[in-house]
Image: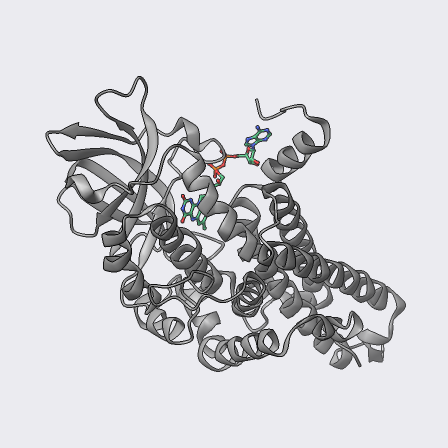
Length: 393
Ligand code: FAD
């Protein structure tokens, strides 16, 4: 028997250090997270406060960033870590993506030296949790329409508006919030990032319940009612919508690898099940229809892993484009959800329970397909690149 990694000789493409990082994260996932994940998913919770310091200890928070207590790992190593975390659950990988690729990256890219010193080391250690508020109730795929506003009052800023679907929102110590900043002298407001500590008067969070996807992840709505912030709450280098979009590109890259981890876990469960489950007096794995399903899924998974690695190498050489990340995100999420659903068919009725990971992964992947740019938005990105015609509006 071979795994998909063996079939495609993936290890031959990784350095010893990359394999070591991947295997360390995989061991942590299996030992520390997997035994509890079904329980967290069922309860609709995630012990972020308890797990974050452990992720920090492993160097997984802001892993690809340099300095300020961050690991400074390669993009490929970061991708492999995401793959192993998401093999346990997309919720765990989401926590790491939001902390490292969104909140910490925003501060690293656009913050002042004081802001970096104040927040990044504690966030890298998992002592402080961050969130990233871009989406609003009425503006998801089109964040440029956001209504949240920051106006000047003397030296202070006054923030009003609301954000929706914010991962880690209810537990975060520090929220990176994107708003149109109205500044004297500017002819029109432009999007800027603001650091809003939890507990600031006027800032409230509301956890979103009744989710059928990413249940082992905390998702919240954030409200800002005349929230008064000091002058230095703004990320000084953030200038326009391209700033949050640059952070999203970083997180999207992790998903290119991450979603395939979920798919791999489903395929492993399906192979395992098919080899022992007997139907019509012989194991399901011995039927041609089952093998056709498994072969097709292995092909898509292997091709996805090769594409992810290729993108990782491009990113490590600082040559990757946002269209290439879109291609990877679209491919990985779309194929991963197809694989998860197909694996579910192999498990029959057992596949619908939390005793097996497949439907949990499939449900999680509904969110992964939607956040960080929906599948349709990435099709539009690629369509524009291929034709030069903008079909967004
Ligand atoms: P919409 O933008 O309303 O899209 C609805 C449908 O319309 C989609 O199918 C979309 O593809 C399609 N569509 C949109 N534009 C076009 C077009 N031009 N042409 C054709 N079809 C189009 N956001 C954050 O800021 N921070 C977070 O931490 C965060 N975490 C999240 C966690 C979860 C679990 C989820 C589900 C979402 C999270 N999000 C977060 C929000 C996420 O980024 C948005 O849901 C996403 O951008 C899509 O926006 P929307 O849900 O408003 O859908």
